[in-house]
Length: 226
Image (cartoon, rainbow, N blue to C red; front, side, top):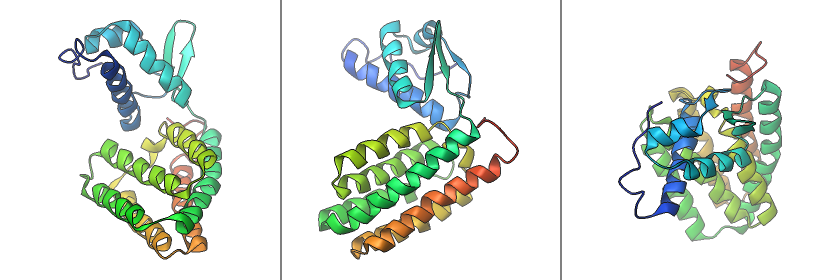
C-alpha cells in the first residue's frame, strides 16, 4: 500500500499530521483505492506513511465514527455496505436535503449566493478524472446549503449522512453523471436565489433521487456495494 510520505512535516505540527492522515485515508476510501472489507493494519499504514501508530489510530477511529471503517478485535477494516443500507441512506438524505434547500431559499443573502456560485465554479473546473476533488467540492456545496438553511440539527444530520455515503459514492462515478450533476446543481441554486422554497426542495430531491436510482441500477442483482 503506497501513500505520499508525511515525514517532512511530522516533527513540526503533530495535530496537522493527524488531520492529514485522516484526510488521506478518507480520500483513499472515496476514490475506491481502499476496497470494502479490506483490512487496515495500523503498523503497515504507519510504516507506509513514516509516522508513529498513534496518529494512524486516531485517524482510523475518526473514520469508524464516520461509519466508513469498522473496528475489529485486532485492527480495522473498510466497511462493506449492503445495497439496502446504501439505498436507505439515500432515502433519508433525499428528505433532509430537500428540506435543507427549501430553508436555504427562505434564509439566504447575497453573500450566500456568491459562495454557492463560487463552489459551483470549483466543481465545474475539476478535471473529469479527478473524482476525489469533485466529491470534496460537491460536499462543500451541500454543506453550504445546509449552513444557509440555518438549522443546526438538520446540518448535523446531513453531515453524518454525507460522511456515511462516501463509502459507496465510488459506484456512481463517471463523467456523464458529473455533467448531469452540474445541471441539477444549477437548478437548485437558481431556485434558492429566487426564494422558491418549493422549487428548491423539488430540485434537490430530484438530484438525490437521481443518484439513488443510478446506484440501484449499477447494483442490480447485488447484495453488497463492492
